[in-house]
Length: 55
Image (cartoon, rainbow, N blue to C red; front, side):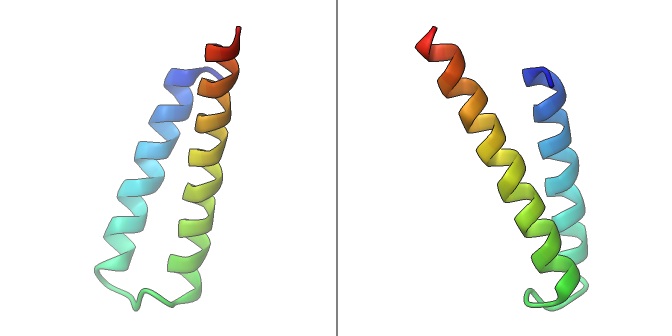
């Protein structure tokens, strides 16, 4: 996955999480699931950047 597409996916997930978090409790299953998904994307992005800098 390219850096740009990963950034786009992160932004999309973040917007969805923010939208849902305004309408549901922060501990709801959906908010927690989306938060975990966003964390995974951010970790993947961080790993991608680290690998690029190491080259």
